Length: 316
Image (cartoon, rainbow, N blue to C red; front, side, top):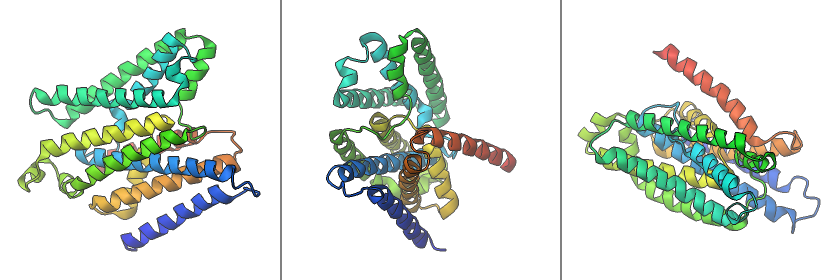
């Protein structure tokens, strides 16, 4: 089956689940329920596209299909930031209550962290990309340790508010935040799409890419920054989803079997929309909110991650 046909089939399935989620059980309440459902679908689509795009390009420059941008510590930084604010100022403070201010603060902190990290590592000379990953893992673990320590000391009632921030949620999303996030994601992907053919060459390795005329260091820096912005926006909008990018990126590799990132990214993005909207529909209609979508994703993603590790170990 050709990749174009596969994309059409996936798009049809995604549209089917979007239609089910939007129109099933409306019972005539179009004015009230439909706009709210449409907002959630838009938020899920944006989040899915951002995570899929950032994961595929991140795995290309790291040449490793079991890594995600979250390994750089963005999820840990987001949880640490929310924990520190609630611990020091309380859950009733403006930074927590005002979703717009919280969104701006979270995105700014994560992007600033990424820029400082990249600047510090790259300015002193050429560093291997795995050195950057190692530093990211260490810093992420450090952030998690501080968050856990503060969560032990925090008031139990305040901890409930911290716990809400620890899991992704598509409920009660501000419409203004969605439009802000959409603008940032569209601009970021538009910039990154200029490097789509460079990514095809980068997948061949650093030396080969340089020999074929790719400005390797510049492209890698740009891709890392774009990936960081997308993860920061998606995390600040709905919360951390640890294994989701790992799932959709590797499914895209296995389903399309091509080196062209234009196909891989679009395929992973459609799979993301299908998984998030379909998963949320199952959570609401089948499980009747007895669980959350992020719990299911992390459970399935953890199992899939173990499968990938075992698969890689057999291959070597």
